[in-house]
Length: 124
Image 1 (cartoon, one colour):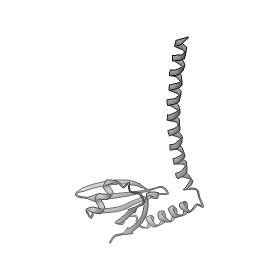
Image 2 (cartoon, rainbow, N blue to C red):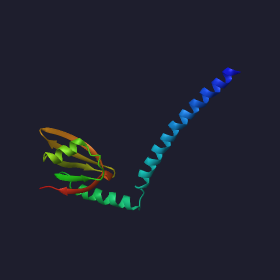
Image 3 (cartoon, rainbow, N blue to C red):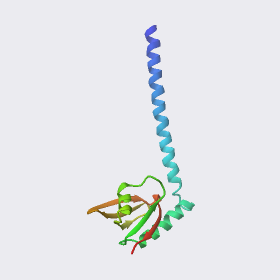
Image 4 (cartoon, rainbow, N blue to C red):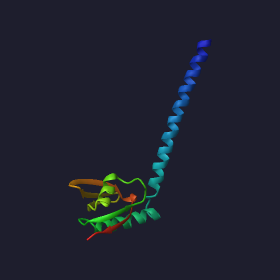
């Protein structure tokens, strides 16, 4: 009889741990759904993204300076701005911008989410 109570306690602990895992998964999915809701047609976020995409298409093949929304910026992009390297827009679609970075004899191609870009300025 004592073994049954130990088995039930262990089973309860395992169930409790799995619930914690499920809760974190649900939070992650809710966060992803929130970012998808911003891309629904007709919403202000969607309109802003579409207008930025049109502007970025005008800069294809040109050297640009990009500013970002968040503090989390790729170190390669920071190196380009700090070392006066070049950032050339190669391609743009509805979600991504493909840029070619050159600094300190280093060439890299990066994909940047369009929603992370706050502004773009052409450099002559």
